[in-house]
Length: 558
Image 1 (cartoon, rainbow, N blue to C red):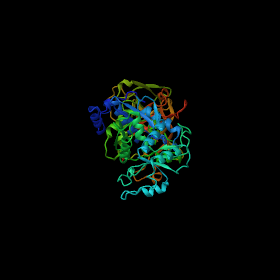
Image 2: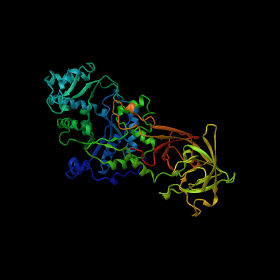
Image 3: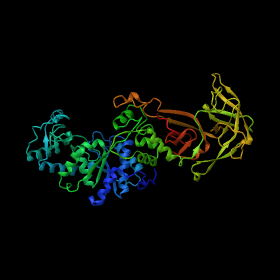
Image 4: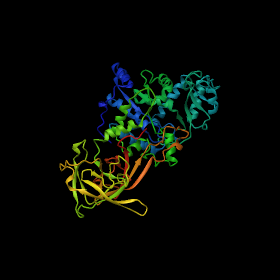
């Protein structure tokens, strides 16, 4: 995680949310104070869509010398799990380096929410209903037809107070009664048709244990939590736009919060091409074994992209590039990949890695000689210094860099052709050997000692420069190559499992890498010449490295 993210230096122009905040500060609204929050439900791992919201809320707070909260929406104990809490905290620490590290919980305010519900009952603005869930749906109406009042809607304040207290005292079964706001069953906004605000749920809660058998609904809890914490700008995604009237209604009818209520502001969600989003769908992929867990590097989860090797700086660069708007659209995944490349190109040392090796024997090179050739670790960042690369009689090249009978415009190694070895010499193919199956096993070459790289040689030209690894001074490694999760865009939430890319993960064994990789550790990133950017994965051991492909050198998205 980088500690150097400076959201004050964000290159994007002022977005519409910042303009609202600017006006609020100018008018001394909330005493010119800014506080934001991210309120995840701990029922799965966060994905890159959540990261957009987190980074936006965090950046708005940091840019305006404000405060950012992480608050878990743990109002539904049926779906929640402590492992999800831990993963989300880890994500926030990575995405928000100046976060104070203190996680809040909706359940911290259950007593306060109960008091707020009682206040609404006393004002005649909430009532206990006996309708079943199915009957409530029937009474609710449709988008084109108004709903109708529940027969229990006109209970007296005293009766509602007693019934609600009995709900709290565990005198009813699940679903037997529910507390609803009394608003308008004919409202064109279905969310305002007497929405439920408390339900009976006999479930153990990770935080409050067995204290409660009734739990607030999210739409009721959310504005109270925001207001109680002092959140000024409740920034959320567009699907909550239709819920904003109820958010405002709750705060407008509670005495403690009505004078200067929190304002909810919505922005467009992030949808990435070739990527399935949504926790419920990602959860299916994990539980049914389509991926290797929530942090599988193919997953768009924050844990997945972190393990894959994306940097938090690259993610902020990407989010700056796509901007913040109210217009929903799909973002080409190549924009994300390009942001990663741009971030890594000056940070990552370069090394040579042969992923599909074939041996080359340089027949005129002394058998017992090893020389060391100098190479820059990163030509775009001279501060990264240089390294010494061993070179001897036997090397490995990519199998695809040799052909027995090449097509036209093939400029790499074939009988009679000469190529340059990067950082080394010119070599010329003289012969090769095959096994009983017709596979080439060895290539025999000669080298020209006058063509040493860096020696000032300015003689004949060759049309190809190839990477290589010294066969006697290299390490074996496992390399995982990744492609897009979805084969194409022809998928939806009903058929996405059938549309998964079967080649989204390819594992290569017996890859050959420069020996100086031994000096590095898990989490270090490299550019493999011609192959892309890679990171040392946690599955590595003291005796064997495992690399995950971060991103290719150029996009293959079409």
